Length: 442
Ligand code: NDP
Image (tube, rainbow, N blue to C red; front, side, top):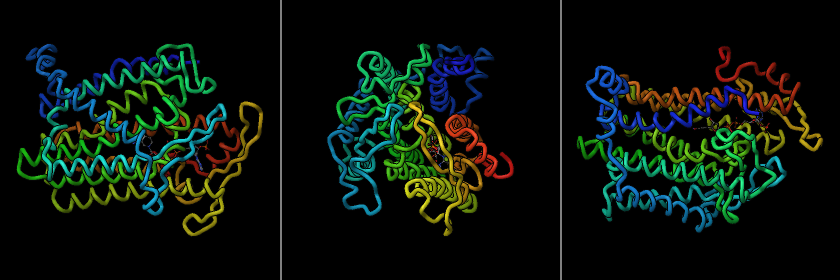
């Protein structure tokens, strides 16, 4: 059943999320990244909506060509080039891997080759930028708004296709979820793991590529634009490129592990993931770099060092917390956390068919400090990207505000699910680890 609050939020997002993205990008294009000036202009009658709209670049054949080639290239890398990285990179888990058991009891196989796709794409990018010069490395920035229209077309097309597919030819009918509410189903998805053929998995493809592979290329394009405009790349731009680059590389290095995260294990594939991965992620997660093209910030050494330290500590906490849970679950508790035997709470749950299963909830290491300390690390890293942009405008701070809402909402969503799953055992766990994100505070 869909409650009224969820429905209202869904309608709000369906109507306004594309406008929010447009507003941010337009305000950089026409108002030097000021979020307030377009409002003032409209309120004072200096401009009409039509003036702003008429100044907005339209869809071009060039952008459509670039975008089609880009997505087609990522499809080829994903579907046709089996992973070879795991053969020579020690510790890297790639190639064919299994996902978690779906509610219908299916274990999907995935070809994990995201790291390889990222490496090939970036090698080609640098080869072009420094050697072949087929196109300018500023190509993404120069076509940013026309590309936004292309990303929207793909985002809507794939979400609509996923909805139709869920009704008429689902990959696995038993894993479909119909609430009977059209908007909810469109937004949150019907199919759990829609696929075309044996290997083209919508969730894995759209979650990681084209959006996350593009993330670092977009930042590189912004850095190239700074170089073109000002003859130098500022240290803040380098910081954003490096810190976000680490986050993206971490994602691909741990792509097999991501098969066990909420996005893949619990979410169905609808507009939220389809449009979100095509539009929201590449456009809004890269706002800091875009901002720095319009406002090049050169940080003093102390500030740059402080931001780098915050970003690296945040990343360390994020990675280690995730690693501790992964190690603990993989070894069924037969491991060491911070050099000691892990402490945990034994818990049990019942599946839909009435079978009883046992599980464990870790209460030591970072998991003893707070129930979602991985999110805390993620938030510290996110704050570092924003701080690199200085304090002149609020636009670059959108990311930390958004991530705080996203991850706090995710905490609630996850805890609600865990409580339904583990019942009184979850209560024992929350009593043992009383805080969610910040020990002693929240
Ligand atoms: P988690 O990796 O924290 O997974 C939550 C699940 O872990 C729970 O549902 C439960 O599943 C299990 N669990 C909870 N507590 C414990 C415990 N104490 N011991 C053992 N298992 C436990 O969440 P996500 O999948 O949301 O996040 C993965 C990472 O991705 C995070 O670091 C997050 O920051 C990042 N992320 C980044 C986003 C971005 O846009 N940049 C978006 C979303 C996530 P079970 O049913 O198995 O018990």
